[in-house]
Image 1 (cartoon, one colour):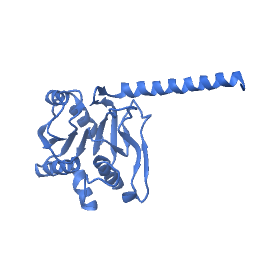
Image 2 (cartoon, one colour):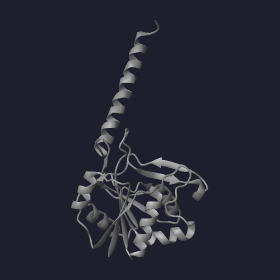
Image 3 (spheres, rainbow, N blue to C red):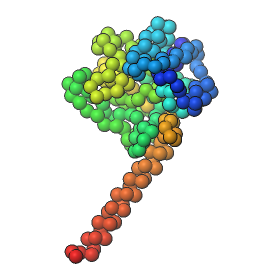
Image 4 (tube, one colour):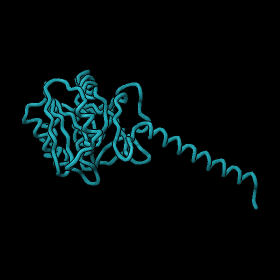
Length: 229
């Protein structure tokens, strides 16, 4: 069992990411590859090619601004091998308000499906693995057996479609071929910005928005009670 740990990045990586990578327990035979200083879609294509060329069974995709626990690979590997899954992701959030999780319950593209549909997975299950149609590639594990069929059908892997990120474009192509994508809500990664953005910020932001709506409702009710001026 051989895994390529794949990190597309520019000329620097976040110190917290470097610490997470250094402390991460590794499963089986692992190769670490950084693809430095190129567009992220080209970087991912090259890293996928390196995984195939090295005879790897898996690719662990990690973005260079992620923060994660030392058991990340152990837990993703357990998930993917259970039920012979092809792809499992942990969950991370956008690093700016409103901190939504980077997973999609529905994601179809006109170029692939003949229609367009997009719905982020906001109220996702917290107690079990669940299917998604698309996700970011900040912290996920996939089998390399996905690569060649997608490439053969579309002559593309991570080439971005119109107004669509490279990771989402791969998801659209792969799901259209019947590959299933899974998310494990117990695996939460932090997204480095000016602070570590994760589910706590997302929950706090939702609470903030509920408070704003309640305040607006109370204000409108108070104005109604006063009647016309």
